[in-house]
Image (cartoon, rainbow over all chains, first blue to last red; front, side, top):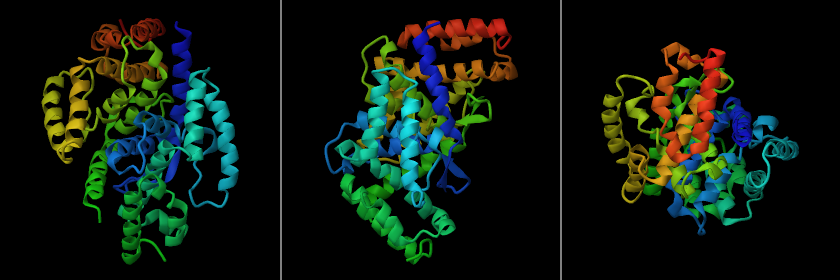
Length: 194
Length: 194
């Protein structure tokens, strides 16, 4: 049997574990928590859909690669809540996970995948700044539609949401402006505390 | 509020329903059935990973667009088992679904998304032939690792699997050769009946 195909399938089986990594936010219909694979699919579609709102010209293929892979490190590191105090420790765990998981592949794929993950994390390219918008837009909108369920459960305030997500403006300023209006509305409706 | 952003988010909420559309195949770890969003994410990663096996040169961005969107019609049409006798009726239902769901968007996005879906279905371009490989490779490998669970539950035979999937050879001949070896092995191990 073709050894490369077997190796690639082993990688796929390994990263498939993200389907059992549940996030802190619920689906838009509030029926249950979302897993990392579902989240990644949604934000890939968003990145295509919202292209006209990107602040800078960008390569869509690169954006999609980053969004497809950005959460596979959670197979080892688990999901860390955006507002959790232990996020600095999470960065270390995620780096070790990237080393191990992308290390299941050989160059050049190992470097392509690892590079896409690093680029997304560093947020220093037009593609990474644009991709980051959707990693944040989805949970904000989920929480808005779910009447602030995750925000309420974890005592998240308006200032915390703005502080943790304001970099969205660097990728898509009009989307960030929309989010600010949404958050105002969430406060007015009692979904989010000031 | 920005009306376009609202429209795009409404589209995202609508297609999010695929997260409750369950396929006939289980996750690689056999823990539960897979939903359409999870399936779409996996086959997007596969399409990046297996690039070197494509029979023809292809545009990866187009392949990813097709794979991201190929199953959203199931929001209306439901999942139709590959080996189900009612598949011809399913094609009609899926066409109506494409009309409605992509019609939630305006041109040019409506036409871009609808066009990608049509192209995937028609399987007449290098991108569609390559994309189709992964829509089929994933469930075959899931069933192989799950000791043929779906095949056994539905009385699927070796000839049925070969007949329904042989077009994989048009997109990636070496992957099809691998699948044939896998199916032989599945027969030998008693996962699939001859």
